Image (cartoon, rainbow, N blue to C red; front, side, top):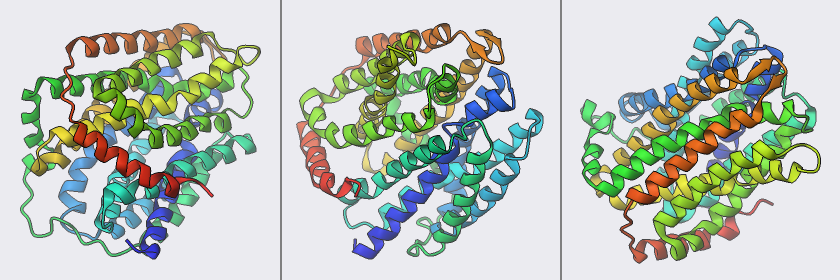
Length: 416
């Protein structure tokens, strides 16, 4: 991959995740504090992403992979999404807000897979080159959060408008990206290929089946954080909550780059266990933390994001890639994504909304210790079940390979 292509792909990742990070984190605060939506409605709003995660593979498989160049599909989806986001910022009635946010997520969710596939297409060695490009997305998410927090607009529709404007930029920028023809052009589209049914044969492997179930279940308590963490921090009086929440992405970068070293020494099972334990610990810290003397607990819960995400999800993706035969690797990753960001997050979004509403005294008073207790307990249950039933089949060859790749990516991934 030459320097020009690298710069183009890095810019693509920066814009892609800036669009997402500008509004996603603070949406719960805007809906709860300003539009005064109930907990179940906030949960449903965040559940829109899960619905899109379940549907987007059909779109990518039937349209993007077979008929149109990837860069054009990206451009159209972002431009249409920009218009929907702008309209979304003007809506107050939930009956209209909900279908519109679903419409937007149906535009945005496929772009996450498309930016990855476009990057892989133009890389000589994706395993070595992709981390240094993808990290720009995490950096832009951090910048978006810092801007929103600095401007003190978390309870306003302004972050949605910022995302709308950046989506226009991303849409236009997409048309300047390297030409990426549809990879399956001319091939007959079968439902079996599109929804990844071939990957279901991996469920015969007990360890894969346990990981699949654990991944789905852990996304239920995970949803509590995405839906209510920003509202929680603002509600208890933490200043610049959006900016402080970017510490989670900062730790994600650090642990992502250090993870291969831990991986080689700990292996799959311990890494996955640590990731799940981190989710439980995060919620315990939220239960007892406050903006005063115990603010360190709140910061600790945020910073744990690096371990929560990297040690479980990234390790899980590596495990799936190693266990799946070459001809169904993509289908296997799609199956895990469907289970986690689709089914698991959808159930979690609904449950978090119900729990939050059940422990809401009035529009400004929440019993946060009781709300956070639920995902903490759920995380521990998943951890215990996973520990008992998962059996690791570790190959040191893959560990060495991953460590070598990450080591080469580290100097390239540091922000300027």
